Length: 352
Image (tube, rainbow, N blue to C red; front, side, top):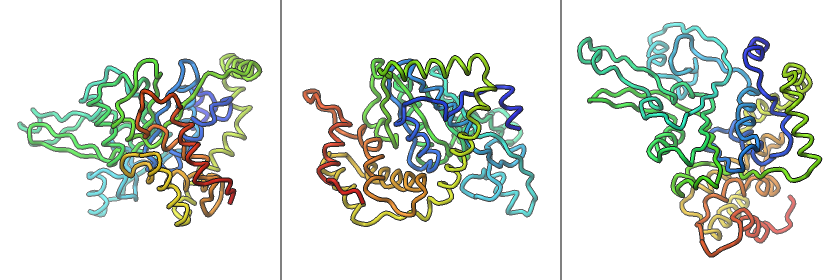
């Protein structure tokens, strides 16, 4: 199946991407634990944002779905199956399944609410009493990745719907007193260029992580990136083959981390330190604390550990908090630098 997929649409290998470690780590951690809440990637044009996001989706292991189901339902996990499949299983029907690649859905800037959420055929419902649902992008993205390029230019109302679905795991469509709901669990990835405007703080806060990427300045790295891209454009299959072992290794690491995640522990003292850092930084609400705890566990699982240590927290906390700081127009210090300062004060040089 992979071979056929690659022949249809060769995708630049994730492990071939040079640099941009912050963005790559944020995506990997969200794939390990989608409950982190997605990632917002802000950076210059032409820095490989879209390429990296498509590459992580292509890397992931295939998922098992119920055949002929509109919502990529899981065959045994009740949280990931539609009400129709749930009824069939409760009534003792055998459901057949198939394996598909993880869905990677692009949300175009001009999308309407109906395109995003789906529509109900009101005429059919009233005349024939049949609920006919035309699924939207939220249904297609279930158990996959939903990517919004230039999310800072998207209508705020649509961003609200996206974030609500990502947080609750469900999408409800209501028209003329008729209501349909379906599961919609996905990793939400937004990208944008800060020159084209910022996202509202209350929307930005809903993203679990915030990665900032800059154009690579180092000449030798730039040459390496250009060569890598040229090699792929010239012969994509040779490039995919060259990185196949590294791709498989990373895929196995992600699968192992997903299986370990539930058993990762984080010491009470470290949880107190995380909340102390959030308090000193005046982070509104408790999302910062929750996401940092989740991300630290995901990172520890990715490192094949059983317990979170100080270094795990140091590695991920800036990604989780930098976008939650209140903006001070008179403050010239970068928010990431501010987080790092407080982290060094609270965690000190403790390397345990």
